[in-house]
Structure formats: structure tokens, C-alpha cells
Length: 185
Image (cartoon, rainbow, N blue to C red; front, side, top):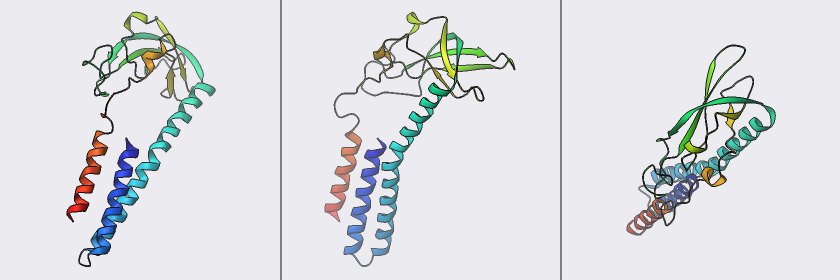
């Protein structure tokens, strides 16, 4: 989504620069706005893959170089912070908000209790829950962790695809507005 937004900002910047070169009275303002939108768009286009790369590196580092512990499963909840539009009824097994598994573990040396949460699970895992799950943690910072959910079917962990133009519709609307603005000016 950031890439679509970045491309839109770059196009807006090019349109502002083009219009700024044609009209003497608004040249400075439009050239500055064009440069701003091009810079912002370039930032969005390159920031999205960079953030994804950082997430992958962090996850692989946790999986390769850390300690595996057994955490006690405490329950399942629905993560209302994530809403996937167009993927089914609200909070059903194919619903808009994913499930998350909660597990607790007490550190043996300092008796601190840590709560771990799984990633997004798109089917209800309540009937498949074991009493304990493996969690890979960083021994120096247990807040860096990765919960192992291999006991679930692979399709439960995969984000459901949203059919139609749901994800690209705002992008197409922005392009339409830009073209309309360009023609009207």
C-alpha cells in the first residue's frame, strides 16, 4: 500500500512541477510543492521494502540465534486492531479480524512473568491448542520472541486474499483525481 501511495505522490509532484513551469505567477510555490511530493513519494516507495527487510532479518535472527522455551498457553483472543476488509463475515473463521494465541512464561532466574502473543491466525485455533507452545526468545531481552505455531494448518497462518479491486481502489481514485486536476488547470 505504501508503494501505491508513493507512486501517487511522485505523480503529484511531477504534475505540480509541470504546472509550475507553465505559469510565472505560481512558479516558486508549485516547484516547491512538486519537489516536496516527489521527495515524499520516493521515501514511501523505498521505505516499504526496507521495513519489510528489517522485519525478515529480525525474525530470522530470533529463529537462528536464540533459546527455545516452553510457554503455557493461556487462551485465544480476537485482535481487533487488524481489520481485513472484504474477507468474509465479521469475526468468523474467515473474518476480518484475526485470532491470536496468548502464552505465559516465568523466567527461572528473576521470576518475571512474560506474556507472548502469536502472529495473526485466520481460523479459530481454540480446538487445536496444546497446553504448551515453543517460543524462541532472545535470552538478554525476552520481549524479542517468535511463537512456534506449526501445530496449526498452514492455511490458518496465511492472510486471506481479498478479491476484486478492494486494495487498489483508493489508488485508482487518487489517479483519477490527479488527472482531473491536471485537465482542469
